[in-house]
Length: 228
Length: 58
Image (cartoon, rainbow over all chains, first blue to last red; front, side):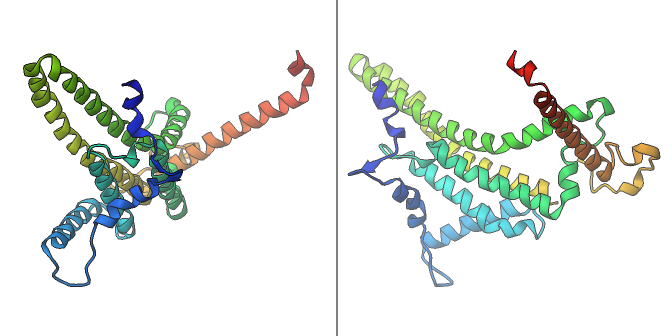
């Protein structure tokens, strides 16, 4: 049982070759493209979702920030679809791997910081000191703000990893407990299944989408802070 | 959060004109001064440890 608990987080290999690359590419393979103006229902729905996400995410940005539109919309669709696919039984979820989430968080955060320093050096440096700070607190607050800047990509990556991993672990544990309870006391197992497992699964669907939104929103906020 | 601040709405004199926590320039200068101070401290402690190798050995 203990060994099986973490078996779903081991990166899968087939005959020694890593299949994780194909797993990461899978969500994009499931999204269709069409060369017609009016396509079928599935593609129309997909376009409607992308349009809604674009409007929601990019409305807060200046025209310069909106050049990040493709990056941010791709990011939220990728993380959301990867998280949702990971809720299928016996699948591997790439966003449970800290390496992958750091690989997304650090370059995006660094991009926002470097762009901020390049285009608005004065404003970016001034962000390290909140307006109206009392004089005795200035040095300490600058150090604290600098540390908080460097913690941002770590927090981004660890938040996504921890939320998805914890959800999967909980589902595995409670599912295992429900299965064991079936042979001991079927009414208790039924109650556990309905009241805990079903509700938890619904929660995990919500968490999968919310975490994608939060990740992208925070990157978008870092971009807005450093570029306006 | 306040809207776009302009440096002209604050009238400071003396050193407060360059180092204050209200104007954009003042905040930038405070940040640069803090980083410069930390860099000087680090440089000073490194030079001091190089000067006294006997202290390091004991």
